[in-house]
Amino acid sequence: MQSNESSIPLEKLAAFVDDELDDNDKETLKQQLAEDEALQHVLDAQLQIKEVVNRSTGLEKAPVHLRARIRRQLDEIERVPGFLEQLADVFKMHTAKSLFATAVLLAVVLFPWVSSGISPVASQSNIITAKFQVVQGKIICIDCDQLHAANIENVQHTDLHRAGLKTSDGLIWEFLDTGKGSELLHDFSRASHSYEIEGYVFSDNRVLNVTSYKLL
Image 1 (cartoon, rainbow, N blue to C red):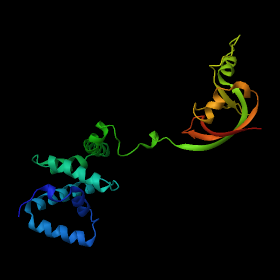
Image 2 (image 1 turned 180 degrees about the vertical axis):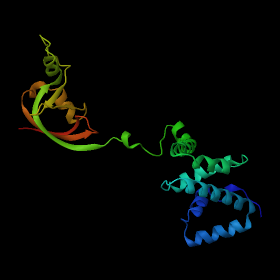
Image 3 (image 1 turned 90 degrees about the vertical axis):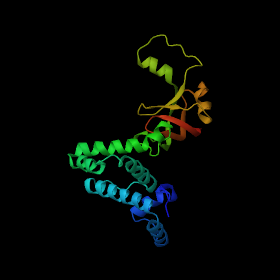
């Protein structure tokens, strides 16, 4: 019986290589491998690649689907004569080159996601977090306050200016122009009055998505 690589999902084959299948799936796959010489060749290639990488790096396990994709790419490249020997030589070099080689392999694997504008793993530095915040202070005109701070004379207040909240320690909080924030942002009748404002702040800035406010 002859078959090709697609007869078994590569993700399942990767899980088999990493000993992550249950006993029933293992036995079923072993029977298929025993009957399929071409599939056995694919498995042998993946086992060799796993051995080279494990011997040369101390990286944590990647998800099954990612390992499968890495091995698929490596298995295709493996057809180049002496590929495994060349790969082993690269990983035997100093750490920088080993890390560079790993980065190149990951770049090959991740390129389809990146090129389509979808990242499978979000960078921690790019993650936007929302934190609940309660602040107290006086409603001010942010633009007038900053112009006065810059020693600009004859400052003319207009309705196009932005209202904000200035705390007792001098910090200025701005409001997102939506919902309750819009009520505060464009109504200067509250200026110079003290308010307690609740809302969510995104990342580490001082811009509130206001959920409620009350006069103190």
